[in-house]
Every structure is written in structure tokens, then in C-alpha cells.
Image (cartoon, rainbow, N blue to C red; front, side):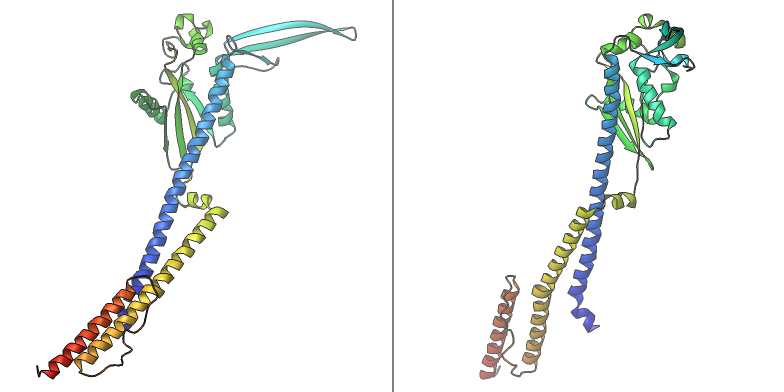
Length: 325
């Protein structure tokens, strides 16, 4: 029991060591998680940039882009705005050959949607698409997350993006504003291409206003939680940082043990001997408290005060003996 008592301060230091270690690991996890989320947000924002840049590129061509297709290729009526066929007769080696070329007109929205469909068909980890609460094609109707994102972006004036994480996915949404090129299809429904009016009768997907919110780019990325984040964030530099932290922590603990705990234990032991000598009315070896500690802490001053107090008590006892108190 006495041994445990003597090591009481050392036990406290060991306990603090483990507490600081746990705190460090907790802080490391939180920082790694914050960096991981920031990285996912940057990735999602870059993908959203790519999708909008494709739309801007396609939008610079009046009416859209004509895509050449083979004779046997079949296009769903929802995959183009117009269709043209060209028949050309060519002579080669005195032989006449008829060439038939088919062209389909695609606007920026169709091109962006096809990019999205390709990622879905290939089971890619990264999924993106464009959607709106004022959608033209029911295929592009927003899901629950996208509905929330659109509502928040509309309600909060300064918000341009919204993101959240689930158990396995990082979901990101960023606003898209209507440009002049969008209005040729999504402006006044009366001025929209006839095919769109036939495929999507009604006002849904039309009446966009230039410069106003038209919809969002929605991006979904794989998300790993828990220890996987911590393990993925570990590299050579993080291992060096962890190693340096524990080296400094161990050096600090050794400093406390050598320059604080050990001197206090010695002073405590000498003080106990001094009390016993005074109580038993005997002269103790005068080496008590004569150790000069080189530490810059208050241990040296504490030792001096103990020596002064011990001398005063001894003088007081001598005085009391001389006057028969």
C-alpha cells in the first residue's frame, strides 16, 4: 500500500499519458475526416465543372450539335431533336456506290444526359446528372436528396451548393443558372422545337428565365466512414508526425519524472525524517535538505523553504529547553 502511495503521482502521469494519446488519436481522426470530406467536396465540384463545361461547349453551336450515325444504329425518339438523311452517289474504280448518312441533332441537355447514362451503364463509382424541379423528361425527375438541395438553394440566397454523406455515398449538388442557349428549348413552350412539344406536352420543363436557377448538377461519390478514413489517411508523413508526437510526449513525461516527481519524492522523504527527529527529540544528520536542485522549477525554492522551516523548528526547541518550557 505504501509503495502504491509513493507512486501515486507517477500513476497520475501514466494515466494522463494514455488520456493524451487517446485525445491525439481522436483529434487526428477528426482532422483526417475533415480533410477527407473537403477532398470529396473538391472532387464533386470538379465533376460538376466538367458537366457544365460540356454544356457550355455544346451550347455555343446554334440549335445544337449534329451527330453522324450509321445506317443500322437506332436512336430513341427522346435522344435527338431532329433527324436528317443524306444520300450521296460516289464513283470509285468506275463503279457507282450509294452512301447513306444519317445525322441526329442533340442539344446540350441531351449530351449531358448521355454522359450521365454512360456512367450508370458502366457501373462507375462516380455518378452525376442534371436535374430540376421543373423537369422536361420524367427520366430526369429529382430524387429525395436533389429535391432537398433545390429547395435549400432556392430558400438561401447565398447558397450555391449543398452536400451530405450517407453510410456509403457522398452526395453533392450545385446550382445551374439558365443561359440564353437554354431558352431555345426551355423558354416559351410555344417557341420550343416541335418534337419537344410532342414528346412533353404541358408547361413542365419550360418557362426558364435567363440568369435564374434552372436546376442542379447532382454528383454521387463513394464514401468510406470510420476506421477506413483513418487508415486511408495514413502515409509516410503522417507516420512521421505521429512518431514525433509520441517522442515529444515521452520526453515531456521523462522531464516530469526526473525534474519534478523524483525531487518531490526526495523532499517528502527528508521532510518525514525531519518530523520524526523533532518528534523524538534527537539530532538528525545535517545533510537533510542540503541537496541543491539545478532544476529551474519551484522544486529548488520548495527545498530551501523546508530547510528554513526545519532550522526554525530546531531553534525553537532549543529555546524552549533553555527556558524550561
